[in-house]
Image (cartoon, rainbow, N blue to C red; front, side, top):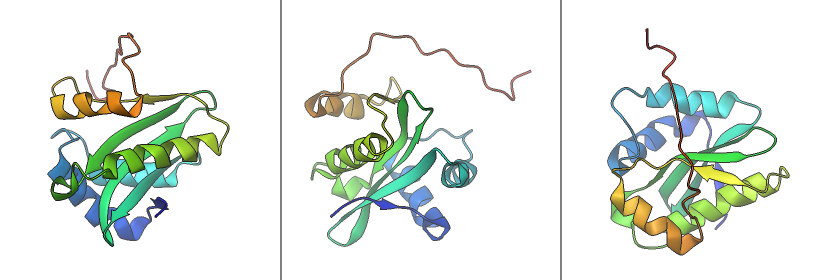
Length: 138
């Protein structure tokens, strides 16, 4: 079953899945991030189903050169069933359809289970350092 672009009607279920799956931080406004991804012309939230139920979702976006994945989450009871692989494949297809050939995946250092899974999908450590600054920091 192909990925589905999520809609505003999917907000509560998607946020609940992210909270259960763990790709979040307490300071992130998940609902605002979901809405922002849907509203952007170069971003979306994709979902895949597993046995008729929502199995996983991810935010995807692109800047014309690179694509990015974040909030990649698989419902805990459906982990280990290929849902994450289908989700990453769907994100790659979304990016490919826009002419983007390279994607960067944000994974928290302490999310050891996720970091252990991605190499089996051909996702490698790019040996880069990501620096950032919160805009609300004073």
